[in-house]
Length: 427
Image 1 (cartoon, rainbow, N blue to C red):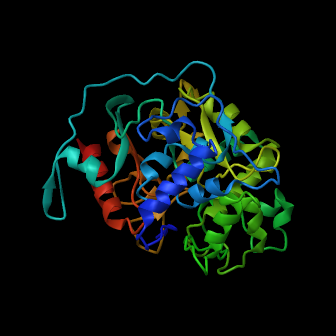
Image 2: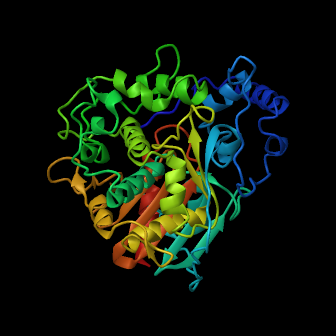
């Protein structure tokens, strides 16, 4: 389970938060957003660029905000304001929009969980929901925005971005930029030679079976975990590039043998895409996915440094509007077709969503950066603290849920969310 850096010492926290917001407002980082917590983020034209001090440092107030962005008293806002907090890279849309028609409105049902019955509105509150979209047979049947969000709000995907990166790898393979997923990663990124990633294939990265010792645990404080150190140096301070930490890691298991969820593995996939296509990830994504698929709004990646230096965070950093996340799910459901075009090879969709059990005989598993959480045939893109693209081929249903879970053990609220999505998909 991923643990956040939220501090358990809550005494005086309100005063810290107030001071933080004052600092950020003075630094003009949040601008109009900081002036009112009820202001929705407008549609993205060109994401903001972080303001650096004369010595190249990120302002202290901005660093502090980045450290606390997951915290439960502000994440309802920060999760839809990433272009005001981080460096970003625009993924422009262009051309005809893939129109999603409206179907007969789905009346969201009450549900049972842990022996109790709850109304649908209770689900929204109990599972910290910002937005929910249900698509059935290619038509929108339910669309809900909460907490001063709307159809133009750009939400962070966190690790749903891993599934998007997998899609881009499939496109690069189809185009021939990547010759084979059986190729070693070091073939495209020589910097990985003589590191723990030497001898690891692209397939093993896609399956999270690199064997590299990287624990997805964000413990901050006096003795931060390796992942926390990466977060601090790269995302908070912009002193280093996230992926360039990879050669420093050690090997724990033989490549291909043990599943170990690792954002660093996906970061390596992004690095491979850069080298194989000879393009920044944002540019490649815009040209091969976002534009031809007919997305309705620009998207953007969080980056770990200024233009010309920073890279897109391929394992955690994509932002888009609710319906465009829905289009991704619908494209996967339609075997890679979107806007009347074959965007992703159908065979890649099949490979990506074929479950490889975590352990022999398990009913849950992982594909190419897609999760299988039950035995119903559904597959899911999942992001930190409650971001979901749930695809159920059996009933031709796509559900997108964008949330603001608190930064602690979310196993119960995650279970409740998946239980409700399974129920909706059967209606």
